[in-house]
Image 1 (cartoon, one colour):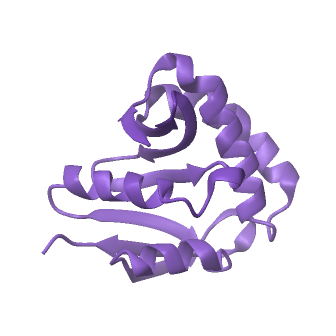
Image 2 (cartoon, helix red, strand yellow):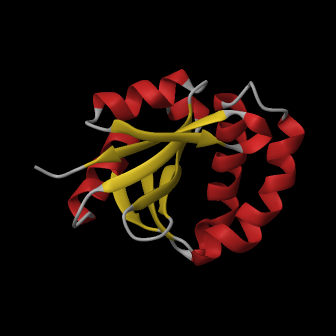
Length: 144
């Protein structure tokens, strides 16, 4: 697996990875919500974000996008490539780039994401209400 910076030519694949993965990992939110969000993700967020992609033999299999400094806005791996180390590799690279730590928001109901970030040194720092009224956990990682 190789990690590299996102290129404009990655947009179609990264957009597809996001849509299929976000729907699969959030069954507690109506699929229509994500389909509506796709337009913003595709046309606004991805072209403007700082994004890393995980590739195998040149094919994009996952990505991590930063929001504002120190914030992971998106970390998704194509469903068929999950549990193969892509997410961990992307997260470890983000940690290397982080100067003062990282923040990420996940839905409490997304137990796999909560467990993944906890296993990788993140701790819950606050809670709020996110999309469709679901509880969101802000998780924080600090370098040692």
